[in-house]
Length: 202
Image (cartoon, one colour):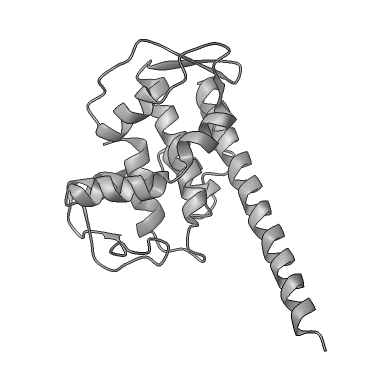
C-alpha cells in the first residue's frame, strides 16, 4: 500500500466536523505520491525542484503513473507546480483505482457525482492497512490528514519530527496549496453571494 492510498481511505472514511473537499484531497494525494517517490529514490529534490531518476516500476499502478508523469527535462518542475498539475482530478482517479480493485463499498459520497458514494469496506486489506497507519499516528499520514482538517491536530507541526528535509518541503507545500485553494473557494463564495444579493435587491 502507498501513502496516497492510505490517505484516500482516511480522507473519505474518518469522520470529521466537515467533509473533505475533493480538490483539497487531490492536492494532498499528489503530495503523498511525491513523498513515496522520494522514498523510492525515483526523484530527489534540489531546493524545490524535482529531479527525476530513471523511470522505475514501483509495483503500484497509480504510483507508476505518478513516476511516468514526472517532468524529465530541465529546469524541472517545482513541488508546488507538481501538486497543482498532478493533483487535478486525482481524488476521482484514486476512487476509480480502489473501486476497481474491490477495496471500496458502502455509502456514497456527495462529492463523487455519478459514482457510487464511497466508504471503505469494513474489512479490506486497504482499509486495515490505512487504519493501522492512522491509529499509530504515522507522522507523514497524520500531517497530510491534518492539512485536510482531519484528526485532532496531532499532525500539526509534525515537520519537527522529520529529519528528511525533502519530506518536510513536500508536506509544507501541501499545507500551503490547500490553504490557497481554501482561500480561492471562500473568495468565490463571497463573490457569488454578493452577486445573488444584487439580483435580489429591490
